[in-house]
Length: 452
Length: 58
Image 1: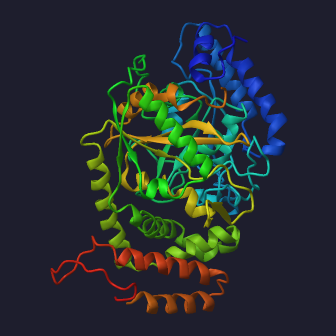
Image 2: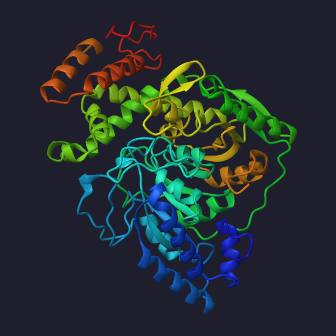
Image 3: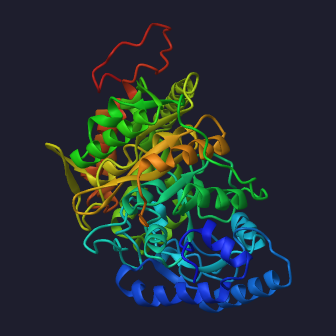
């Protein structure tokens, strides 16, 4: 096996030149799943036969000169909220018992067309309504680096599957941070593209106005390869990182750095120092109404989730895990006038985030205020205060679900215990390609990822 | 409806429906709703500038 085949970029090169076969790579991933999944619990379903057949087809096509592109023959996983035809979509809930998807989600069809190998469906927080992956009909996912900890969520199985070498990328969803939170906790690159850019047809919804889909993977280049396929575009022309000198980046302060674990704060400030040393111009910024983010987000997500679950809350209530059941019920008590206030608040926040880009190429902030949390913990100590796990994990990501701006998390350091720390770059408006180019330029200064 | 009245009604209804465990969640939601209602970007039909109000002023 050639040395640089840990990333999609490296593997694609080796597959295209037939130094390795998709069948061998897929077998390696399946072996890894067999070895590790019993303890990590990343997968709800492993698509052994389908993956082997897709890999054989890929090898046959590549040998015949019909190379489809950089995902051809590459094993990927899907959060089990996403329809893959002929397989159950459980959403990690008993409520979905007996469901089998009769068609691919739009994004799955696009990845099928790109020649990707579908290795399995990953575990998640039930209906994506939580950030720890503990509430799942299939049991919690364990962090591959420390089984007593959560990998984050809700796409926790997705993150664990990539971190642990069970696949090369996973497709997750992000309604309040569910791609970026587990990516940060697991030392991965996680991309939430701009709102509406990736179709969500065939994905079990959580919040109709804030759901996003995107990749969890090992590098910015890998994220762009998957992103291009997800949006149905051909592969982007090969881009190189440009020089960082003179780039103007806004660093979000105030609310965004007021409540951080000391090791996260230290890693973030070190990242800022490295960027300054590279010639990047950093300017401190704030979002004037940042203190309203959590209230605005809560009043939208609870109402929209309750509406989507109204029928099953009436007739299948006992099939939800109790915490998710109660969270869904909360949305049924919110008054229409308060939902309307939250929509107004979202507009205010969107304008304030838009304004950040008038004179800056991008915005930088930590991704997750704390390292991976301990399984079973309801609260976590942050400095001198004890914070609810759900609140602290959503704190830095949910704003960009409200506003729809594209955001990417990249690893920027580790705690003394070896747990990953991540930082987010946010891009303007709907310009995910511009964000990816910025991320590629700055990636070397963030620090080594899990392979480093 | 004030947040105080809303919370009383919600807790009573949740208890009637046997949703044990809802009280602390609804109390937390009430605090969040109070914050939402006192945000300075809320529209006021009088046309007057929004004033900082006590959480249960409405």
